Length: 233
Image 1 (cartoon, rainbow, N blue to C red):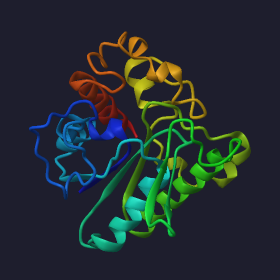
Image 2: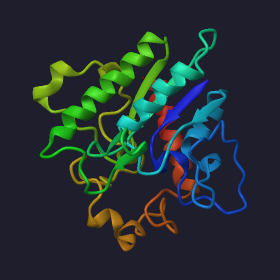
Image 3: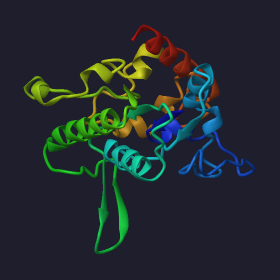
Image 4: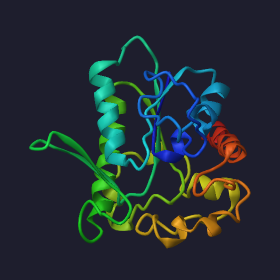
């Protein structure tokens, strides 16, 4: 079984209609009217792999949230008799996630709300990736890490802290590998004015008529490239 973790790109944002129906066990975080995970690239990749799957992706979520979901899955639904492959579709590293115990509420940090000041979120994200990878190792889950629309920032000074190097499928983003464009400069500025500028995004035939997410053909092309990366890994 494949386990997919990511944000709005991984769940097929801007492809949904109000008449869609989804299995909540397979797509626990899909939003009716916005998302259509059956048209998103994970659906095509798992189909090519002939694997059943769960897509845990959630709009605006983070690497921290993916770790939270993986741990929850391993403590509630994991079966030692089954073989799993986890695909962490990495988003901007300045996103974060936490749970307020006083409010009993999940908190998602995104856009320009940095989880920590300065660039400490880069270190935090690497530690979260280490944890994600380690949980996979402990549970004998094959782990792949794929930066989707922005590069994964791994500074030279932190190389000795990285446990997950062998799990990274590509050093640049899947978007850059697929379409040859640097869609977002890096994880520090992944959600800037350019990203919100629909006229900028409209220049890409793999996005329009959507605003900032891939269209159906865009998702298929991302899937083809990801399959190629898996074959060559």
